[in-house]
Length: 325
Image (tube, rainbow, N blue to C red; front, side, top):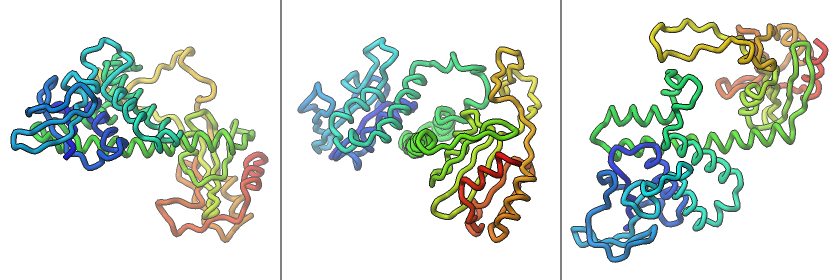
């Protein structure tokens, strides 16, 4: 039997450190989860102590291997150090890397985990006070806010809370893997071009995340051609939303409109893809073309509507239309 122990009312650090052990330490994927008051260890007679993996004889006489994370003041508990660059998650990550050869050969997975670890370190050392507009509600939609919320909903069910947190962090892990792949696709395959609205980028890739990522990088237009379906997706920078703010302090963050806060590449741009839509429809009338009501999205395929028919046009042909419209 294998047991992972962390503290009751688990926070993000406890969740992620336990998840790392179950997910990436060979032989521990089916380990049981148990909880103790913060700082304590699981009750029983310890036959082996002082290492990450200890041995215990439980009160019922069963023997087990046991790992404490974020509690117990052992090797995977950081509460005996003042180092603000360390938490249980970072210690667990370092330990897992030493014992998982396949993980060490997968740079994408490692980079995704490194980003998660850095996020947890910041949270565990209360770095949110240094966020821009730290009281803004938008931060409460993060995984941290969700874990706090699930503990409020099920205050006495530690297992339900940690299982919820682990599902969330598993999803974040997969998203980071995909984002890192998108970053590589943009760097290696991205074709920069100029339009009357500003700079665009075009990529032929299976990864749809490149569109959102390219927009946040400052491109006015992002174009993706799916090599599997032929679908073309064009997204322009969205129109800046005018938010009606609640007078109560802590509502959604107001944008700083001072000159210093304005970044030229993110200014509001008046874009209308209607002429592009009309031109592409004439060039490939058999394809399914959908112009969004905002006139800033032109879609020729979507996971939301798999019945749309892709285009025979090449990525270069689409880019040429955008350059010359």
